[in-house]
Image (cartoon, rainbow, N blue to C red; front, side, top):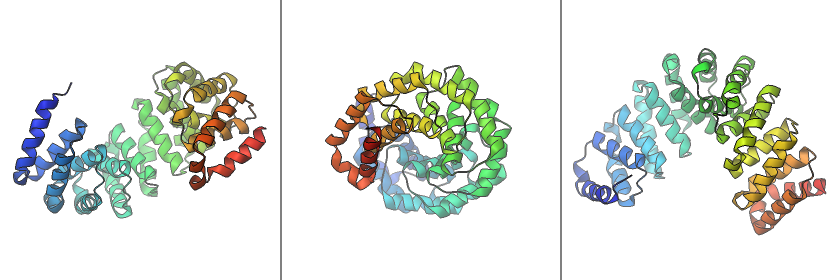
Length: 336
């Protein structure tokens, strides 16, 4: 439990004396604010203003901490992000694995894409990638993939380090890695098979989160990998946790099974019921993908169609800019 009066008092004191802060003081204060998720706008603005002209004095740890903090808050100060990228680029060879991981994760999370920095991050990772922890490899791969940046030597090196260590990875690590390779459409049969084998016991034991299961299914579908034992395991585990699924997870799992033409009746019925119950939280893309999935599998579910239709009517203008209006009309005709 946070002591808010104390934190507010500390924030006020920090603002009044921030001119005297050294780079480490600035980065650690930003890190602490982000770690507490304390959205104190005056303090955040003061930290950014004080750090911006001094980033060339920041060491690797200070830069990584600042980037991580700014992405978590989040802080959308574009000049600050540009300056962090420039400073990180100059000293990237001095970054240890965790600093590389945290920095790449931060830029991807804030959706600030700098191809020069991403190339430098990938290249700097190569000499020591075998020393990266599972978390570092997972985060760095996720970050490059989310930024849609394919660095073939990095992905190749990553493949072989994964193959020798998948048995110690958590399901979250496994699903992030699978997603990364699927997002970049990197096909590697040995890794693909190893990831499926490693994921099977985790999901079968019921320890995987809904996000991990749906990301794994999405990755299989994206790479057109039909692994019946793993899909069955995902189906059974999802049935026990379906009430915890978000709209995105319902949509993604439905889409994945339809792309692989897997018609698991109990699961689809459960996905339908959950979708109807939470339809108000569905984004336009969620509505479109869920409708497409059930239509593709030839499942006629009138209550679900009615719920999607009603939700679509309520936000009809949102379909036009996304290009999903015509696809929904086609799907409705197909289902009819």
